Amino acid sequence: MPALSTGSASDTGLYELLAALPAQLQPHVDSQEDLTFLWDMFGEKSLHSLVKIHEKLHYYEKQSPVPILHGAAALADDLAEELQNKPLSSEIRELLKLLSKPNVKALLSVHDTVAQKNYDPVLPAMPDDIDDEEDSVKIIRLVKNREPLGATIKKDEQTGAIVVARVMRGGAAHRSGLIHVGDELREVNGIPVEDKRPEEIIQILAQSQGAITFKIIPSIKEETPSKEGKMFLRALFDYDPNEDKAIPCKEAGLSFKRGDILQIMSQDDATWWQAKHEGAANPRAGLIPSKHFQERRLALRRPEILVQPLKVSNRKSSGFRRSFRLSRKDKKTNKSMYECKKSDQYDTADVPTYEEVTPYRRQMNEKYRLVVLVGPVGVGLNELKRKLLISDTQHYGVTVPHTTRARRSQESDGVEYIFISKHLFETDVQNNKFIEYGEYKNNYYGTSIDSVRSVLAKNKVCLLDVQPHTVKHLRTLEFKPYVIFIKPPSIERLRETRKNAKIISSRDDQGAAKPFTEEDFQEMIKSAQIMEGQYGHLFDKIIINDDLTVAFNELKTTFDKLETETHWIPVSWLHS
Image (cartoon, rainbow, N blue to C red; front, side, top):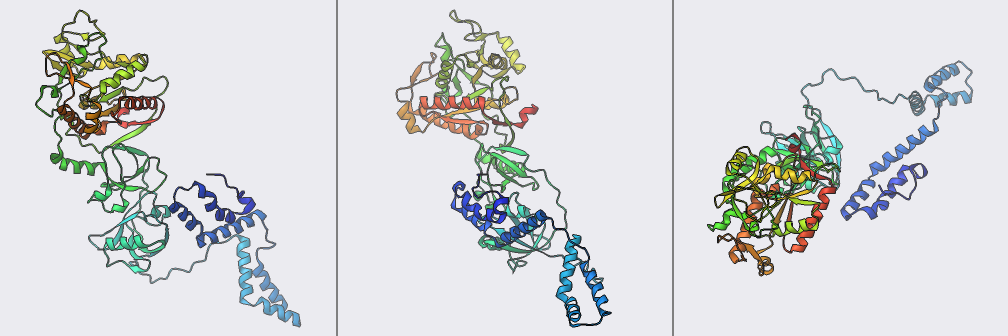
């Protein structure tokens, strides 16, 4: 709260302080709408009256006046009775007349009530002939200042009554504490609503500003207090309530993008949850489809939107990817390929909706998080990885892959590759010791889980590039992977920036580097679209490699933040 120059409440009074508050806050308010809201709120006559009463009571308590006696009315009655027995002079007659006046008697009665601090009203007895079936009606007056009311309504299928379907957490209705789910709405600003459709009532509310008066019949159901605001979810899909035909009220919906962190405020409704963006200043929640509802919708729609496998053509090179190992000695090792045995549509059965997350920050004594790089062939992923390694060889490291091919004369075991027998390789595959593996020219190649652990044990950041479907199996508390998708720019930029560059090709047995072709560009764009569409919900960061230097700097900045700042990780990792 900014400091106010008007002094403390004890110096100027609360009334003067509140009157000056909008002007004092004006430099700190972002929009004219918010400023108008402040002026309207602090200009309310009812608020002024309440503040004045508060000040009077505060002054009364501060002075602590003590009554001389607590029974002034009884004393006046005794005095009148005593004077009746005296000779009636003109002064006595005037005093008796004065003591008999109703307004004086009322004043003395109020004095005694205040002196005895007995402020409870005396209510008349309940009539004996009251109708037990009669509904109790409640009149509610809310002030709506350029914000939705924060409640949705529906027509009861059986009775036809208009009832409150839900109350949005943090909205005007919720803050008032006067409107509850199940309350029956009878009138809005004096307009009966029994014969109106919910859409017509919503229109009346939308056009109303300032004070709105409701006549309602309270629900007899007791609301159970819900534990709200304790769950955080990462959205795994984009959502626009204006395009959702199923949402009960588009104005009450909350839009979000894939990757946004949402704070769940209520799960009382099995179909529509209430949420707000994490860290948002606006306390009002909005409607989002529940996990179960969204999964069911996507599952029904899934056959229509099944993506293609990553093999986008019949060319031999399409099923291969560049080796994950950066060889320092044998340039041919850099060009070796392998075919992945896992299905490219491995995850199409999964329906990404939301993932529960929790804040995480790396501690000084902890191992670094595994960094997984994903991208289509030719996007420049290996070049970025090489630049990172060169920038700090003590901080970054890569895995040493396994292979069953024979060691060449210039190679050392454990440097270019870890050379093992075919039988041992197949045994390790059966024991799930490989993150991914493949076969090329009758030889196996693979990245083992232990090779990742070896890099991390040296207190280094392990840079690992894998096929995107493999990412799912790395998402554990041990590795806490941070997945970065290296994305190509537009095909026009590819033609412009890669015209003199070369791509590693497997069209011939030598795996030679050849200039990019138009077909290479189209394959890269298509492959990237499929990767992002099918596995984008697993990506923590997307970097467009338009310019290698710019992309490298963005990558380096991301790494620095990853090691020092708080990030959100799946709650499931903590139990894996």
